[in-house]
Every structure is written in C-alpha cells, then in structure tokens.
Length: 111
Image 1 (cartoon, one colour):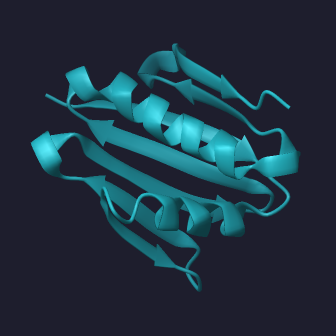
Image 2 (cartoon, helix red, strand yellow):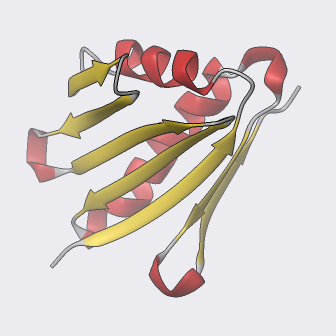
C-alpha cells in the first residue's frame, strides 16, 4: 500500500529551488535533476522511505510524494523544511495535500 501527497510552491525561481533541493539531499537520497526538462527526483531508499518527484512550471515547483503510509508525514517534514530553509528571502509556503483534497502538513518560513 502506498500513500501520496502533493505540494505546489510558488517561487520566483522554481528551477533554482529544485536544483538546490537535489544538492541538499544528495548525501541522504539518490537524486536526479535534469535542467533542460526541469524535472527531477529524490529517492529515499533506506528503509523504503519513498520518492519525491519534482516538476518546474511557470513560477511554481510541483512536488509529489509516493511512500509507505507510515513514512509520508516524515517525507512531508523533511522536504517541507528543506524548501522553506532554501527559500531564503522568498518566504515560501509548503502546503501538502493528500488524495481526496485533505490537508497534509504546512511549512512556512519564519522570516
């Protein structure tokens, strides 16, 4: 059984943000980033934690988590805090949504 969550993060530079996420998690996950396709992934393979797909759009970074149900909240926290930390002056907000429209966790810059 798998669980999922999706977040749409508005950013002036979503490609830079995705590339920075890839670099941030390179030591703890298998990471991929294709600058031309503006797509990538973070695969947290230890203990089958899960995978995060990243897709850049016009002014938005779309993140999609697929994981075991017991790891979804953990991935929301790990990636959500990573986005907020890397956002700097942008004061980014990460609001995870679960299937069916339910709210997941929310991460907001404190600055």
